[in-house]
Length: 271
Image 1 (cartoon, one colour):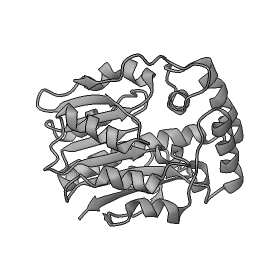
Image 2 (spheres, one colour; image 1 turned 60 degrees about the horizontal axis):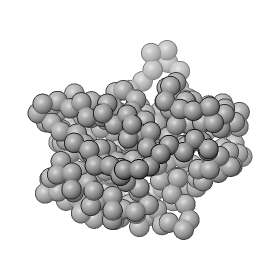
Image 3 (spheres, rainbow, N blue to C red; image 1 turned 180 degrees about the vertical axis):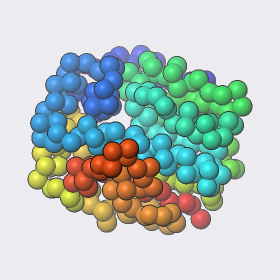
Image 4 (cartoon, one colour; image 1 turned 135 degrees about the vertical axis):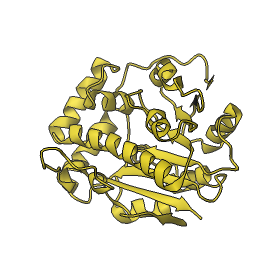
């Protein structure tokens, strides 16, 4: 099932972060203006392709850990982006066939491809709602109206590569608290967030590229990212660079540097 806002057309006059991300992952669901902005970002930081892949890999690992080790069977994934297989529900349902997932995004192109997100197991359920994280009240109302998630049972809130796009005048910490408030004990926050800590010169350049392209960003320090998890119990290894969170290892023994990835990741459990 889907819940969508009608009448919105694709804006191809400026680049969109989700479509730039699609380009970095080697996808085909983007426009020339997105490719151009992505290439400028890649000129500022050639490793941004690896950053995009590690962001995706963290989502896969965090989803499996929450399903296998914490028994979570429900996810709310905000800032879904353009479907890139395997999607979160495919990972979750590979562990638990009855897993339920609601995706939320505000890009009409994601809505266009949302049917890909609906291919659930018969035991589980998936849904897509069109909503903006900067209006968390409306977002949560749409999620509740979808009647997919049981708010009496733990829910994992997935916010990957999203909150650095929440800038003034919005309060990103208040938004995350609002999203977590209705979730019961045992729920989780799984998120990652770009940081300038390891290479401030390069990542300030990347921030300028995104802002000029029409997607303002605010990359935050480790201590600022830690604030998103206030009141939650962080699971091992805490907040670390994305590729160091429960790494699966590489076949050739190579490993990217923290400066190359510059994406902090963590998972916290609600008491």
